[in-house]
Length: 231
Picture 1: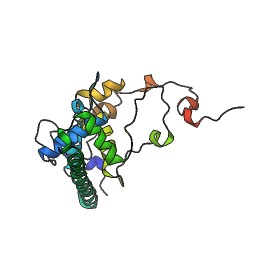
Picture 2: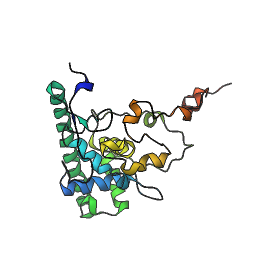
Picture 3: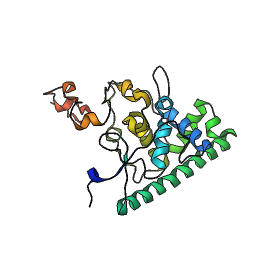
Picture 4: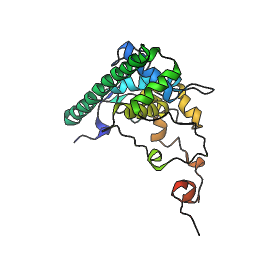
């Protein structure tokens, strides 16, 4: 098997092009949905981060899966790995197209409009119907999350449309900008993460977060919900 370091690297533009997978209606629908997951308030949200662009590139095929180590382009897959990724992305494409139709179906059934044309409050209501869950309340840095949400995964295998959308929105909000999301680093700025200027800086160790580590911190401070009551 050829190591990834020996794969061809193809330079690809991740901004400023028409949608590669979504129709314009699908793009507008997903952009509206991601904007309810990370709304714009006094801080930039999913719209400003270009989350829909990140998702569109991911769903477009296998050209934007692996960025090269130095961030100069994307690795060109071939063989069985490429075939496996095509099948995986094909399944996710179908899941998104079906999900968008379901969003519009619920919106039409309840409000006689497509999802993208609804008010933000009504969009929230449709997402609640789709997920069969209430809209989450506000959280703060001192909020202790339940175990299930604290262990959110990073893979989309087996996820339904709604949970895949939530995962991809998080990824597009906070990914390295080389993948087409986190535009102008707004996601990193929002959480106070400096981030590397380019992926190359992570290879030659010119970028490090070691100075931000807090050493000798009790593990209970990281996972307070696992604390046991002490007698």
